[in-house]
Image 1 (cartoon, rainbow, N blue to C red):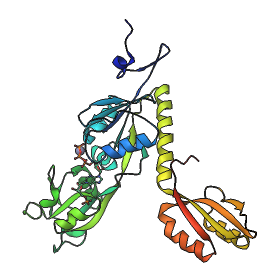
Image 2 (image 1 turned 90 degrees about the vertical axis):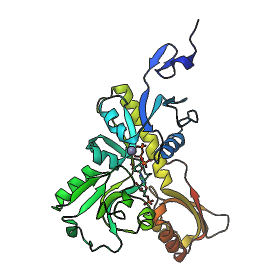
Image 3 (image 1 turned 30 degrees about the horizontal axis):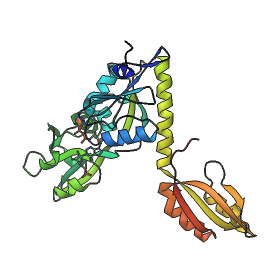
Image 4 (image 1 turned 180 degrees about the horizontal axis):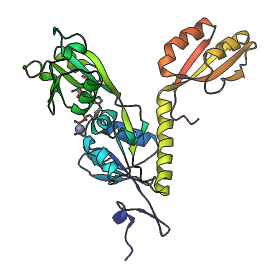
Length: 305
Ligand code: PRT
Ligand code: ZN
């Protein structure tokens, strides 16, 4: 009897008798990276079952891709050992595990930093004043190399979680931990005194991929970049009097030049362009001053350049 494709789904794609490779991508099983990773894949046009958190693997329906779910700390070594071909992890984990060379592409979500913090009223006000002090952290390697680089002789107290509580119970004078919004530090009466590294979710890849998997990976990276770019840009449309077009076009040059089209009303035209989200308000003010009217700003779904 013919085997149903479902029974082969975790091994390889079969297409008209031909066996095709599956790119194996490790994603965090549960935690802060899981949803962002799955959303990025979906926005990249990759469909897969809406997996329950206890699923260990899923195969995409329309791309030669298998997702495998692990704890984030284990992903770099699985990539290095060839158990998976690629993975998505926070850059902080790469620094901590000494695997930063695996990084292929920063993915633009789960932004955070590894930072030093001390109790609000502590005498410690500079990096130098950490000398001789105890610093609690779950990131001993990042902290060790930072202290070494700055020639600070402090003691590292390794702790696996709830680092922010340690100064309050007298275990440490300072902490080195992940900070995102800063509200955990504030809630625990802590003040940030310095950043060791910035981090975001990153795609890491094995150095031993065959040509077929490399091609699949390039395709995936191409899609990730298009989604990431679109998330940071907006499409802008506006009306302008013809005599102001040059000034306005110079404010929003877009990818090459703005598209300029005449309006039905004589002496007016419409300009279309792309702007970076973080320049948005500044540009809008400049455009209004330059005489733009009827400004529309629209999200972009994908952006290929
Ligand atoms: O179970 P597993 O080992 O897979 O997960 P985990 O518990 O080790 O990691 P998880 O899910 O907490 O975080 C995964 C990754 O998300 C981290 O390695 C970072 O790259 C990234 N990330 C982004 C964060 C945060 N933001 C973050 N805010 N990781 C942790 N935090 C914690 C931080 O430890 C602190 O307790 O949130 C608190 C601070 O947040 P703010 O917003 O109050 O400053
Ligand atoms: Zn972890």
